[in-house]
Amino acid sequence: MTGLTRRGLLHGGGAVAFAGVSLAALKLPLFGVSGAKQVPADCRATDLSDTEKKVIVSNWPAYIDPRKKSTSTASVFTERTGIEVDYTDDINDNAEFFAKVKNQLGSCQTINRDMIIMTDWMAARMIGLGWIQPLDADKIPNVHKNLIEPLRNRQWDKDLKFHAPWQAGLTGIAYNAAKVPEVKSFEELLTRSDLKGRMTLLSEMRDTMAFMLRVVGADPDKFTDAEWSKAIDRLQEVVASGQVRSFTGNEYIQDLAAGNIVACEAWSGDVIQAQFDNPDIKFVTPEEGLSLWADNMMVPNLAEHQANAEAWMNYYYEPEVAAKLAAWVNYICPVEGAKQEMEKIDPSLVDNKLIFPDNEDLVDAFDFMPLTDQQSQQYEGDFNDVIVG
Image (cartoon, rainbow, N blue to C red; front, side, top):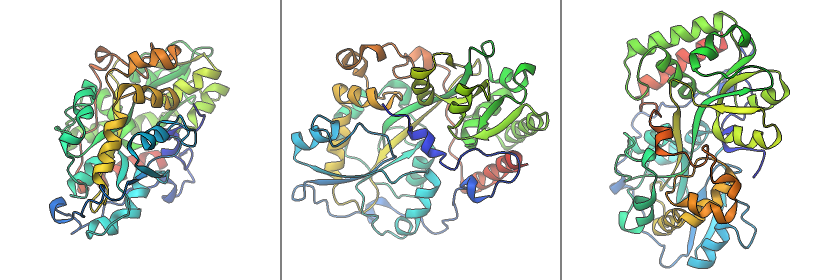
């Protein structure tokens, strides 16, 4: 367990206030990739897995148990399979990584990686561009057998042809119980007078706007431009009222613990880790539901060790391995059966609903629908106009 979380690193640029923020700090996604679409079958390398026992993995920082230990999940993988892992934690932001690889992947050139791990919306984007290789289902039986039900049937890859979730998380509400009564809904977060100027929202558009769409009665999984306009207008009204102190990355956790804010939109993994030091920090499932997201393992075009990458995927879907990983990262474990294995590793985490939610806990969970290039540019622009002011 570490104080530096993966979702925190997603927002490494810090808080976004209403004034004095450069566009660079917002890390606007670079979606201008006209002519970059590929056909995976036409952009495929010879698989050298049989003769080169290695796999090159790019992941987010602080998103795996310490690899240098002989008992770590990565070390045991190598010991068991003979596959050496060239592991780099060089993904700090979805849009930033996209910008780093778009020229190569867009022109069918190698990025010298066998696996990349991207958040849902970017995974959908790359799959749509044809930059990701289809997986051999016969080589990842554990994925198809053990993936938890709430993460199945994602509208951008329903049959797990291109992706396997690494870890998942929830976006909901956190509050400091020593400072204010429970905040039960997103509507309360936006309107309660005792929260005015003492609450924050997230600076990632899809997180915040998914809830704004729910607040105005729309479905984040499928909405119209008119519904989007209604939601963005509502957000503008809330900002103009002075209700929101700022739009932030995960530094909200420090502010919440210190009492600088008393409630906020929050990520589940951050809250779990904050609770070790401050049990007054509470996570709430809003009445509007929960936003469920995942970071996903994928094999990019021209990967030379796809079978080894698939062996890695299959290994991490063994319940015992998944439990060991979850005990360290503290996000939602995507693997069925890992909860039972956690009894042997850390019994204190077995009943933690932010690591092992029941299917009933996620019955109202929602995703954000995949966007076209045009929609992405429009919606990101609309959102940034509001939060920058």
